Image (spheres, rainbow, N blue to C red):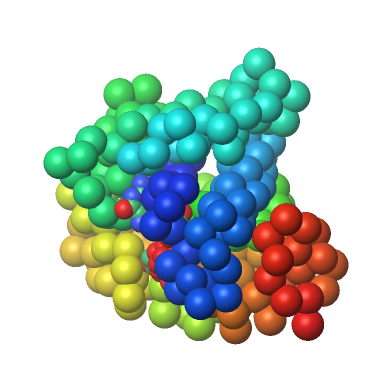
Length: 222
Ligand SMILES: Nc1nc2c(ncn2[C@@H]2O[C@H](COP(=O)(O)OP(=O)(O)OP(=O)(O)O)[C@@H](O)[C@H]2O)c(=O)[nH]1
Ligand SMILES: C=C(OP(=O)(O)O)C(=O)O
């Protein structure tokens, strides 16, 4: 099962606040989230996608047409509300893990909602890196190799694994896997590594992707 934490329609993408007004940031967050959730829902071996958010109306609006009654995805997409007394990214992922355990999932794939180059092949590569025994934690890093953009966790063996998203999370997740007695595999692919947090990230994207995202968002094309 896949879990996508999604902040809300107002505070997200704060590192782009100097370049984009709140409305444009909201549109960008929505466009990126729709892409990631659509890719996950269409990826082989992903049987369900859960989006965990404190902003349910924004998320539902963002994902309209990607839900099972729509035509976007194969796997069902559901929105789970993040309780106000459990704020923050790691708590959101914990909420997602609880949903996955309740649904009897064997593995949890966490994916950030801001990966414009992510493809179904990338998702398949993350799942394959989990190994034949499906026993490895997979950390797909960001382009600086310091963070974690996607994380695959075996749920039975990984009961004690603590999520450590934030600065330096690649090393923290590898250490956490070792602590929990699990093998860790680190994956670096263009489609998993490109997250969009800063103007520098924007400048690194292929021109065609920037053109696609530019409409309605207004980031500079060059
Ligand atoms: N549910 C939930 N998701 C979060 C939270 N913080 C971050 N996320 C999500 O986690 C992923 C990674 O987010 P970040 O890159 O750390 O934050 P961001 O909002 O995209 O950008 P910044 O505001 O610049 O940090 C994205 O999918 C965010 O929407 C949170 O407090 N709750
Ligand atoms: C949350 C993370 O990164 P960023 O905030 O840079 O997306 C992370 O890499 O764990």
